[in-house]
Length: 148
Image (cartoon, rainbow, N blue to C red; front, side, top):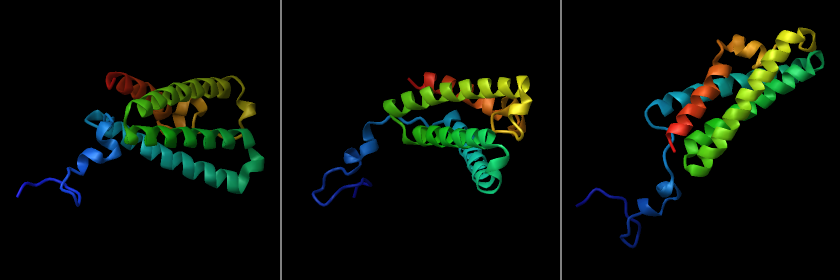
């Protein structure tokens, strides 16, 4: 008896799945990329939830930017796992937006540190996160470009 997935009519059930036509983005080094995005998503979400719920009045801009970063990381992680051409394009656009955010906020925190009484995920180009916030979008865009 062959080892295939079939439905009640005997047709191949794997061909009917929605992911059958999607190009996988999580292969090879892409697995590591998704792992890093997943870890930084958990860190950014946890940090922003705690800061917004306990001390939002102290640094509302910084904490709001951390929440935005968490959302961007979560969306990129989802897009990479989902796969397909549309998800690849969306993830690439988000990686570019993430890099722009890191560069703008990183520069802003160096030029006008008084505007940020507390750090964001993107402060000082992600120094608090071992510069992963500035390295990750570049790596992501390169990977997504290679997966065309």
